Image (cartoon, rainbow, N blue to C red; front, side):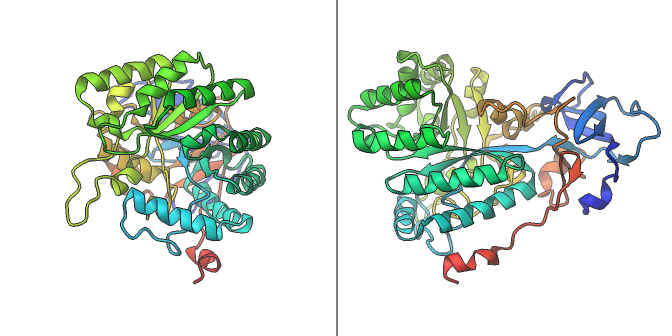
Length: 437
């Protein structure tokens, strides 16, 4: 299964026989599941899923590929990334590997190097990588301090149009939340967001007048018809809990739009009663929560010469049990906030299973990089396999969870509109001119 084009039938209508599918990602079939996995034949016609049938029930005489019980997933959704920061590590590393070091390094690089040409080239490199791995929908946060917000949103809009249908894109503005009371700045930022069909965002933390600032955010979002995606409590400091304040503000303002909160790490440091109260408010407010396990494991609880003692993730299981929509995502890629990563949701999923204990059982785990983030981003046409939907699929040789989670699945086949794509990853050497190498 190493050559996608040669393996798939050269026909407009064919069968993917003897497939193993994550049940949570499939619409349109009732079948017995084992650890959340079902067996099926998938009929593909004219780039769409024509039928999902029990094994052996596909029409005879059609060209067929026997997957030998290999897994088939929908394409992935990476709902919290930073495409504007990506791949600057080699020219601006984080000498300490901690959060403050990341802030300082990115600030210096942004002010010195982030021209439209630079941002666009790095975004394109990231999207080519994500596409090759099988991702079809990405939300990115864009650093939005003036004048960078105009540069990055204009580049983003251009790239979004160019990649439409391959990797669909959304963007949220990212800025220090205390600047929301700078009327001239915030008005200009909102104008840019509206013009480029983005989302309101920001880095929230405990600060004087936080309730007032949140009221401005929700009032503006209501007036402009914008959804919201915030960075929240990205710290191990248990005294920091703006998550509760945000949930209360959404309820108080009767905001009807979508609100996503990312990180929420300090929630895991609270005592049980306070944590439960906050989780109940998050559920009542209808917030969605995305955890970024790889980045936060890298940044948090880092003290030179000492082994880290905290995982850096939120109370994922408790939030999910309370009815909160929860997902995981890549976050940063090869920049001062995370030195590694490749925008590969298979890696994100594999690490999330280990870090957050999404296993035992794994029955519904596949949803965290597929249908749940697709629903949070209001794109239910992504992240699931459905009759009548696009045949945007990722095929694996792995048959069972242990096989899937034990290797990087580098031999996967990515299908878009029923056809295999070229999975060649871009060479890092292409970035050398940007890095001064």
